[in-house]
Length: 138
Image (tube, rainbow, N blue to C red; front, side):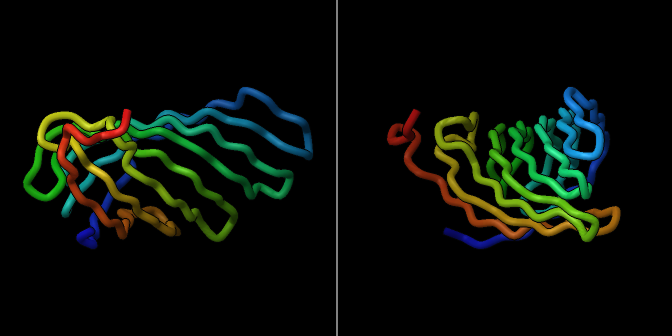
C-alpha cells in the first residue's frame, strides 16, 4: 500500500452533552466538518461519541463521510475513528470502511493515524490501495 500524508483543519465543531455524572464522567455527541488538502482533497462531516473521565481525559469513536478525491480519484468514502484525548492532545487511528466508497474511490482500503496538539491544521499519515470493486466485502 502506498504511504501518504495529508492535512486537515476543523471547519465546524458542535458538541452536546447527553449524559453527565458530576465529578465522574460525561458523555457527548459531536458533529464536526473538516477540510482536507494534500493527497486527500475535499470536505467531510463526522459524528463522534465521546466519553470524558473525571480528569477530562477520555475516548471517542466516530464515523466520517469524506467527499472529494484521494490522489487522482474522485468520489466519497467512510472513515471509522477510534481514539483517546487528554490535556496534551488527541491520538487516533482510523480506517476506510471497506465497501462504503463511491465513484472512482470504489474498492478503497487503508488506514491512518494522527496525533493532534494545538489548533491545526493537522497532518495525517496513512496508507491506501484500491481493490477490484467487484471483490469488495459488504
